[in-house]
Each structure stands twice: as C-alpha cells, then as structure tokens.
Amino acid sequence: MKRTSKSEAAMFLVAAVVLVAFGAWTVWKDAQRMQPSGGGVGLFGYIDPTGAMVIAPQFELAYDFSGGLAAVRVGSRTGFIDKSGTVVIAAQYDDAGEFNEGMAAVLMSGKLGYIDTTGMMAIAPVFDRAGPFSEGLAPVATEGKYGYVDKAGDMAIPARFRHALPFTEGLAAVVLDEQCGYIDKAGDFAIPPEFAHGGQFANGLARVCVDDEWGYIDRTGQWVIPPQFEDAGEFSEDLSPVEVDGRWGFVDASGNMAFPPQFEKARGFSNGLAVVQVNGRQGYIDRQGAFVVPAVYLNAYPFREGLARVRIAPGRP
Image 1 (cartoon, helix red, strand yellow):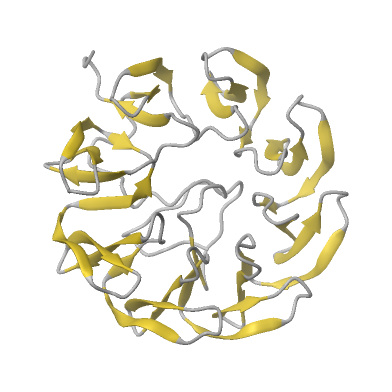
Image 2 (tube, one colour; image 1 turned 90 degrees about the vertical axis):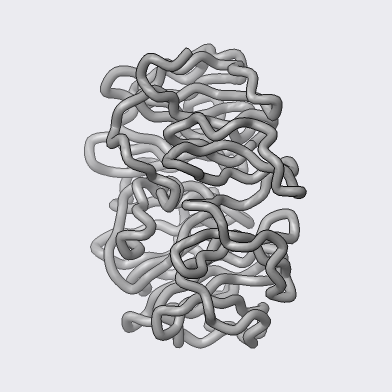
C-alpha cells in the first residue's frame, strides 16, 4: 500500500492514505506527503488553532488526538497521552495507532492487536497488519492477505485482498489482482477494480489514479472530476489539495480551483485551517489563503479535537 516517492507511508492510521497495488506497512499512520528536508531531527509537540504551544515539543514521534488520547513515542516505546500531555496509557508498545471507535491498534512482539481506551487488550495481537476501526470494521492482514475484522475480533469479510483501506461512507478501497476497486460491507465489489491507486471516500468523492493522473469518482464509480492532477488529497470541508506542475492548490467538488497551485505541499482543511508548505517550512492558512499560523514547522498536521501535532526544528523555542 505504498505510494510513489511523492508520498511515504509509515503506519496505518489517518485518513490521508492511498491504496496502491504494491507495498505494505504495519500499523498504518498517515501518508507523509508533507515530509520536507530535515530528516528525523526535531521533536513533536501540540499547538492550538492560534499557534500557541499547548504540549511542549518532547516526543520523537507523535500522532493525532482521537477520543481525547494521542499515541506518542517515549524512549523506544509507544504509549498514549491526554490533552494535558500526561501519559495515561504507559509506553509499553512497539508501536501504536490512533483510537478510532474506542479501539487502537498496537504492535507487540511482532503482532498487532487492539486495545480499548483503558489500555486493556480488546482483540489479541495475532495480525501482521492492522488498520483503524471505521464503521464497525477494521482492515487486517495475516499471511499476506487482507480482510476485515469486527469489534469482537471475528473476521466479518474474509481475507482475500492484496491490500485494504478502512470503510468510509459505506465503501472501502481494496486491491485485487493488482487493481484497486471498492467493496461494500458484504465484501462485494460496488465499484470494480480498475484503478491503479485509490483513496477513501470523503464528501461523496474518492481520489483515484489512472495512467499516472489523479481525479475523483462518486460512489457509483463515475468520474466527477476527470483525471488531470499529478497528485491529489481527500476532500475535507468542501476542498481538496491537488498538485499541478509541481505545485499544490485546492479544488472544490466541481473541480474548480479555489486556490491556484502555489504551495510546495498541502494538506486538507480541518477546523477551517489547512497545512501548506513554503520555503521548506509548514504552517496554516485560512479559507481566504492568509497565514493564521506562520510557516515555521518542519512538519505540521491537521487539527484534531482542537490540537495539531507539529515538529519543531532544533533550537527553535
């Protein structure tokens, strides 16, 4: 499930993910389209929508808040903090995902299972790959095949796919025979596998790629925005980031450019703000295109539950 060099994926977790016919990862975190130069230097903290630092930069890795908790790396292990920055689930896991629908994937001794918000193991660690719960199901893999597990730990959709993404708006992107299509919750194809890559549905549209160009389809599989972009994100708050001639802008659901391509990188809108990159640093613009939080971060991510994780350059206050 790994994109080309434009988008690196580390775990199995946020909505900004794309399904492709090749590659895989373990606990699906978000697609690292926004990775600037700077390697692994800097520490993660959390800001509010004004740019004020709420949780000081102190984590080598950190992920979005969900259900009031966020996974963070403490030393060589991963645990969960609350919005005060206090560790509430001890750092005991090799890796961990975000909480969705009250469960989070965790990696222990090379296998993945799910914990609840108290840290109790809800589904035993028996999977080789594990994604977030959405609409009552989570994509999991054993022996190289993906299916979907329910919250009781039972396989609701048998493992037969090469890759799989979570359900959104009743459909999930899967790869079968090196082509991407969309299944319903019975495991049947609602949209045949005919795309090279595919993302999740949001606002009734899903980004898909054919012949190295990205566009958007509706839930019937019909083109709404024809393939024309070098890369594309998912719709959020009625806009989606797209790449044209090496620069990123934003389109509306009709395919009209709301913001002309001008940014080095871009993420979708959340809480009325979108992450963009200029001069190798990332900040937040509003829907008028004005910077609300200056572009000073090595990495910045969408706001979730009022906070956003950011990675600070060494030596910066």
